[in-house]
Amino acid sequence: MVKDRKLIIAGNWKMNKTAAEALDLVNGIKRELANVKEVDIVVCPPFTALAGVSEALLNSNIRLGAQNMSENGPGAFTGEIAAPMLKEFSVRYVILGHSERRQFQKEPDDLIARKAAAAHASALKPIVCVGETLAEREANITEKIVGSQVRGSLAGLSRELVEETVIAYEPVWAIGTGKTASAQQAQDVHAFIRGVLSEMFDDATARRVRIQYGGSVKPSNARELMSLPDVDGALVGGAALEARSFADIIRNSI
Ligand code: PEP
Image 1 (cartoon, rainbow, N blue to C red):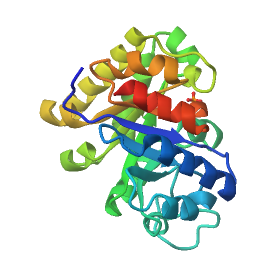
Image 2 (tube, rainbow, N blue to C red):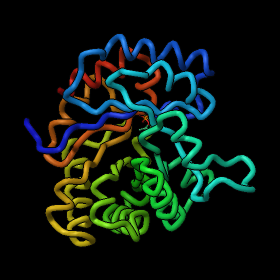
Image 3 (cartoon, rainbow, N blue to C red):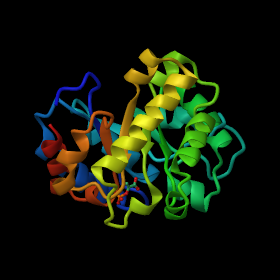
């Protein structure tokens, strides 16, 4: 199916890969995907590998992303990384509010909104993650949870900036579990999110925002998921740690 939004497929390497291992992986991905222009391809290594991966990606069709950043500018914030430090390595995207950070670092929506604003202020495109837990899905409150995450995490953004924001719908129960949302479940929530964007902004803006699906995406399910009308890409964890499987997801999505 031809969509008017370009697919964006990003690999979230999480807390995996030393700098040397990251170079091997990115060089493999580059070889596999050298001629792909139909999809925006992004890799998000850990901070310690950004410098090396950035150099390896010079003049390539693959963009660099980070997995988190501070809502603050440079200063006395021990252990944090500020947007200009990412820019130095030609980082273009930054994952914000991943469910692991929401769970383990207790990141709330208003913090994610401040990080998103800080990212845009440095011309970084945020990939803002939302998604319900299994208990929330079973309690039939998926829309309530996801709706309030979208509203809270994008609060304060202008129409222009939200169009430069990517949303990743990642049902928490599907992350790293091998369980994927069914095509219908994914499409329903993606359409719901687009409806929330229409209410927050307007229809035209909502139509331009790219919404990725994440949660056990692999080569065998990528084609079906990426062909859904409101699914505009994928955020891939486990299957992004191996060049061939990440490349197969992308090839199967075109
Ligand atoms: C993720 O963590 O963003 C993710 C989707 O992981 P996985 O693909 O391993 O489920």
